[in-house]
Amino acid sequence: MRLKLIMNPGARSGRGRRLWQRWAEHLRGRGCAMETVLTQSLSHAMELARASRGCDAVVAVGGDGTVNAVLDGVMQAGDPELAMGVLYCGTSPDFCRFHGIPLEPDAAVEALLGGKRRLVDVGRITYGRPNGAQATAHFGCGSNIGLGAAIARMANRVRRFLGDAVGTGLAVLAALARIPPADLSAEIDGEPHPLPRNNNLSILKNPFIASGMKLNVGLRPDDGDLCAVAISGRTPAGLLQALPGFYSGRAAAAPGIWVRKCRRIVVRGPAATEVEFDGDPRGCLPVAIAILPRSLPLIGSQA
Image (cartoon, rainbow, N blue to C red):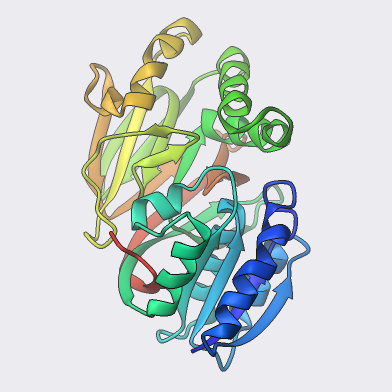
């Protein structure tokens, strides 16, 4: 098997670099032909994956940021035979949990070497940029409009010092205190749905949100569905009261939380409303999101 490994040496404060020698020896011992490249940024990881030629699979070696950048690059490469694999060494393995990719280092290599491919769904998102232009990318986990972008920005700064759970928890509290609701309008599979005083709208392909948070919404990796989850009209105290349900998964069934399965959603609202997907703030409204069913060949999935 011919592999291109895109490695983030800073993942989990250098843990990726420390694991690399172990993984490299294992792969070479099993006769893999490998090209290895170190990333300089998430955009660099995406570009490296998009430019991949002459290999069977592009492997993300890092955390969720690297995983999602490589996924976007593989999708943008436009080669339906190009597969993706993961050797995970980050802090919040939402993609791996959903797809059943092992987290233990030796088990992860064995799953990759097994070469079993599974076609899984990917989300495609077109979003606004501050200069008025639009950009298009792909995600494997989900997008948040509203609170999610502020939470992601602060969490990404502090988790390396405070740990995943504490860092994300503090980011949630800070966002609840300062991000006001916004009046949104959504068009879901062609039907209008106003969302007045919306605190946060999640469009999910993966029920695992971040740092142990999840929503029991019945998604599967290859079911061709997205799920929109809206929480609206809550005060900061009301949002704080709802927070435990996002750790148990039961928030999706709580009163006042709006849930819809869909295949396409367009969201409009104030241009200053931020958009986050797969853990990083990216842009602003408007957004258009669609599911691309069974569009990514994924190696190592045991789901």
